[in-house]
Image 1 (tube, one colour):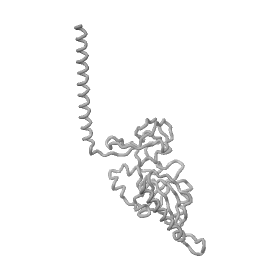
Image 2 (cartoon, one colour):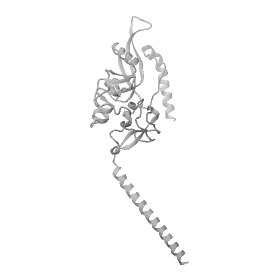
Image 3 (cartoon, rainbow, N blue to C red):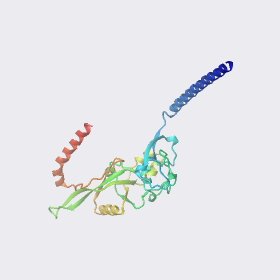
Image 4 (spheres, rainbow, N blue to C red):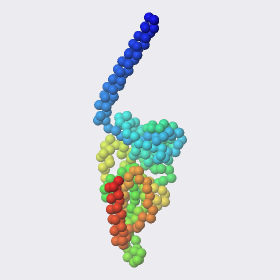
Length: 275
């Protein structure tokens, strides 16, 4: 009986000790978490690219393989792929496998990071880089930046369809959903790596370099030779829509289409306000 009582007391004391130890550990963890929150309260977070799912080695990366996540800037490696670089890893192979949620590093990508001083390594194989004399208001008040997605509009002088001897101005959409590789001499990689990135982002430029197909490059060069005026319209980064049968706009079209355009706009505004 005495032995059973001793065993019961020992078990009870062990349970009490375990509870005290567990409570002590939780208190220490809470204090540590509180301290970490105080340390990181003013810390800056940045967006990084992560694997949306498990990616085996040798995979050709597509948009569905990528996701974004916020991390403390101090914990992000200089080799991490940022959202500004996301377009440049598409269609490239992974050298090593990645787990779901793992931060994508340039060391995981075939060929590594684009050369900071060279543009050719940024161009997707099979595509071309072409520079256009565009800046200021033609580039959305100079707010177009490397890695942005844009449409290219052109205004040209064509012979009138009704009066061939008369030249009339016509505006049309030349290309849709085009990637900007550089503005002036600045690429996305240079902008990210600059110590004074804010000043670099606000720097003026007079040329914009776009990533296009060989056929599209010919089209843009021809448009320049026609002395047409090219203008860029800025897209949301996630907008990859493409519109068919956009009209060529001249004076007659403006006169005929404006009432319907304004009516449609008012309908869209009312629809959005009701959502």
